[in-house]
Length: 193
Image (cartoon, rainbow, N blue to C red; front, side, top):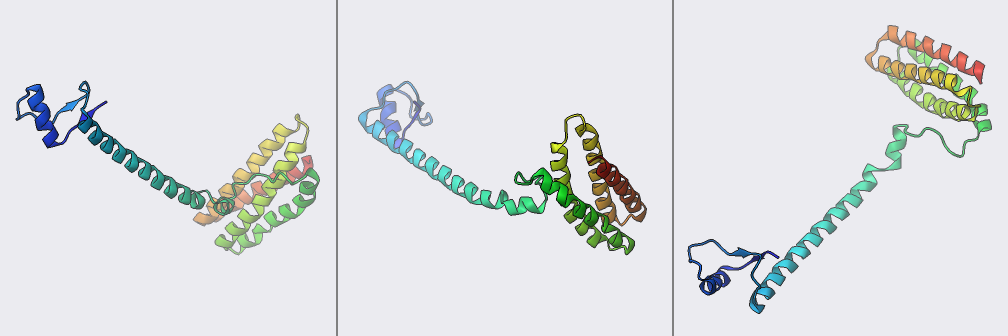
């Protein structure tokens, strides 16, 4: 146990031990403190523990209150981190997929009018729902059919992402190319499911 003494206690201790008075305060781990010294050291330890507990409590409160803002589900849903809803059945996905495909293909009207921001918004909205439906349908397929469907799924949504970036950059040529790739991928996927 490390003990630090005040200047008055240090002088008394130096006299007892015979150490010179010009030496810095005594820090010792092998001396047994007297009753007077142990009370002082207990106060210091008690003070440090209280400060430590106060600091931990304050940090805990700050982190817990910040966690609500950081890990809010509303923020996560805004970024579309959800892949599939567990409540969605295969039948529901198969029933809804045609409407979501139609919504995705209607992005073409925004592309033709060069309304890039609107095209991005419509693309993101419709592709998130289509992604959910396709994921559910692919999971319901037999294991030997899944690899090809997953490749098409990946190809489709990679082109959706490329189209989104191309719309942001207002690259009309790349937008047309990505849109054609999306149509081809959708035709191939719909033929297989």
